[in-house]
Image 1 (tube, helix red, strand yellow):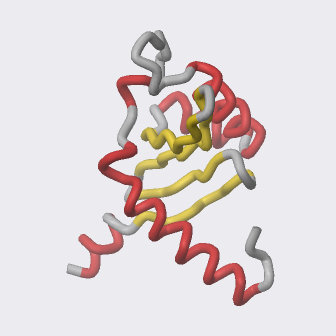
Image 2: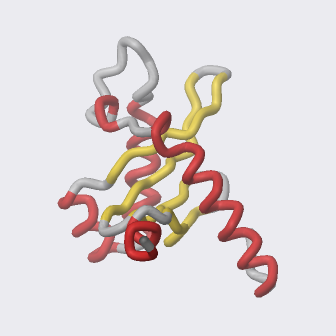
Length: 116
């Protein structure tokens, strides 16, 4: 039971304030990009592909900045968007888990004095 819980526990791995969060869930990584379209702000959550994980491990934080910007500028929520990310949206399934992970991360970092 503990192993199952640990594999399904989402945790914050990295973040860029007001731009994105990177989460780990089991062996997978998800990015939550803070996006905007016209007057609407939204979070777009997707799993990183194998290639994206490799680039993240090679290039780190800066690659995630580029990825989040690419997601935002492609406007994946627009009905007419041709975004390559559009079909990878898992926001409905993972938004609650991501919010819980961010809350836990912030509380942990507040105790250390490093929350942003």
